Image (tube, rainbow, N blue to C red; front, side, top):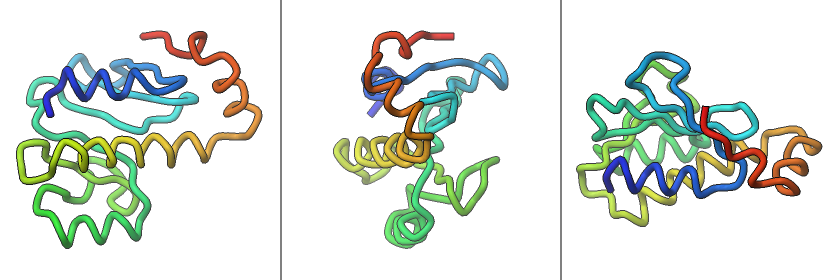
Length: 125
């Protein structure tokens, strides 16, 4: 997977925005104003994604490509190397899992608003 494909997967999800809140190199994808994925454009070989804590431990034990989130809460975030043995489908599932965790943690009213007006929420910043 490369950065262009990763970006298309992320912005293709309902209610996703993309921005550079930290610096000009760190591309951040959010849903409902909350981050679910970030990637360093200066070296786009890995991304940080949110993960269920139990699943995070399991993935880190099974795959060298999955490590505790760099500069993130190590319990809830993984850094995922895209150049290892993880398949495209596995990488996509990790992105989907991160999005779903964040989306499902949003207040119901906000989730409903995103679902009802998906195009309105998909603005780049």
